[in-house]
Image (cartoon, rainbow, N blue to C red):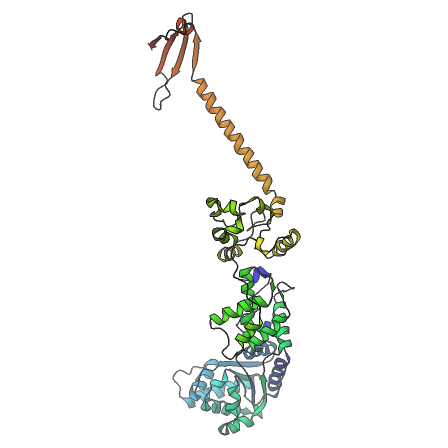
Length: 478
């Protein structure tokens, strides 16, 4: 939604894992190196843990993207509280085996046969279990059994366990001693520090073509780190809301007051992390949030001081509604000097420059309501009739000349119409001068009459010359 407003080529802060946006910080590089080491060892278990949102699934996709050219058969599972027998059935399903009505022993036999065929074709199998903290002890024991399968000293399958922090405690239990001994590498994805948080934000923005629009006050990065605790998914959530706030309020320079407004919205919606303890303290350190922006159309309906006393008295003018794609009509003689805000991302900078050059403040910028702006971004902008263009741009495009030409055209058409009516009326009146007087012939002008329905009458010449005597009319009907 806000991508076109800022000129982005995509959404940089989606919550869905995408390895194309992965930020290879120190902890990420270490975890990936351990996984690559495990792949080349081709045996045992490799474990990667981390808090929710630290990038574990992104790490898996990034590793698989690098292993596309390897002769590997990847079996990927998302664990959801699986028991041992359920896990075996899921693995058989991923291997495309017909195992709907087979018992556990038959399933294991089918799996072993399939893995043996992979070994003969010079292809190794690796099993990636995401959210492995949901596995039961019986499921972990089944995985340990599979890692014992080997052919000519080579393991038939290798297991990668990726999960949250409780997974580390699970594999260290006394009952998991045999599995723990087969662990060849283990890494933990930690949260980002403050510098890594800033680098992470700039990295993801750079992936969508960010070149300084929008800009961020330096202190915002420390606030975002405190609010997200350095967890990448939380950072994405905060930045996505901040960019949405900028789109709605038409802001391209984010400051501490803007961050306060976003934090208050997240708190009211109960979307802040439960373990963030100092939200109120953070809000006390921030300046007051700016009042929600309203369009000038809404202000015309409520704020008489914005229009002036003389304009506010004209209720019909003050209550006029704007049209999408049309320039707002002037409400006073001073409105021609206002800089109308452009909704197109490529024209936003020029609108701000016009404000600075003309000395107009933020109160002199007419903005469209949110619903109109959302609709405007779905419409291809027209260079001659864009949403609220600047006065200079509208005049340069010929708008004033076209309006003057239209008025001249309408005036000429009205004059021709009036002349036509007068000529037509005069052609119906016929005069003749006779010796005895003036003969006047007037056809009937009523609708539905025939041309021959004409009345001729004569006005006496003597009556015309004698002003004292009333005129005598001698009607002569045809």
